[in-house]
Image 1 (cartoon, rainbow, N blue to C red):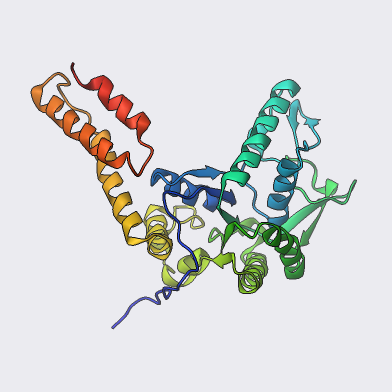
Image 2: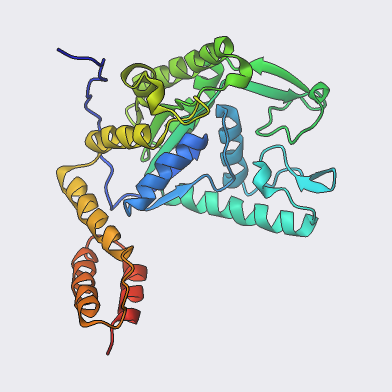
Length: 318
C-alpha cells in the first residue's frame, strides 16, 4: 500500500557531470539548486545579476550582458539602482553601483559562454510594466504602485521570447523548472494562474526543442510532498528535507552512476574537512590530516580541490 503519489522517473536526453559548466538563473529556488550543484563540485555560476522571478526579466538581463549594454542607473531615496537588477546592487555611491553592475554583467556574459547547461527557474508570470516607457521590470525598488501596470504574461509571449534564444544556441542544453515557492502576495488563486502559465510555456518549449528539458520540481512539491511538514515556518518555502528530496530526484535524473559515486566520495571528504580537533598538534590528528591529504589527491584527478588541499597541507607538520 502506498501513502504518497510519487512523481514518476523520466528519461532525460542528456546528463550533467563534473566536466560540465552550469549557469543557474531565475528565482530563489535557482539559487538553492545552484548552490547544491556548486557544493557537489560541478562548476556552477548562480544569478550574477541577482534573483529574477519572471521570465522576461531573466531574458532582459541576458540581453544586456550579451550585448555589452548597461541598464539605466536611477536614484531614489539616496540609493542608485536599476529596474533590471536585484536590490542587492543598490548603493548610495553611483560610481560604486556602476562598477559592481559592470562586473556582474561581465560575469554573466563569461558564464553564459562557458556554460553548456543553463538552468532556468521561472517563479511567476505576474509582471510590472513601467507606465513611462512601457517596459517590464525585474524589481520595483519601492517605487509608488502608480508608477506601474501589473499584468499577466501570456504563454505565447513567454514561448516566443525564449524559443528564439534556445534556437540561437543549439549547442547548449537548457533545463527549465517552475519554482515550487508560492507567491502568496498575489493570492493563492492568482498564484495558481501564474504557475499554470509558466508550466504551459515550459511544456511547449521542452516539447518543441531537443536541447530543452523540463524538471518537475513544482510537481514534486505540490503532489509528491503535499504536506506542510516539508515547508519552512512561513508555509511557502520548501524546507531542508524537501530540498534534499528534490536534489536526490535531480541527482538520479541527471547524474551518471560515476558522477553520483564521485559526489558521495566528495561528501565524505567534506565532512572530514569540517572536523575540528581538540589538540591540533597530536599525532592522531596529524595522521588524520595525512589520510585526508591522500583522499584529496585521489579526488584531484576528477574534481577541483586545490583550495582544500592547500588548507590541509598548511596544517600538516613538516
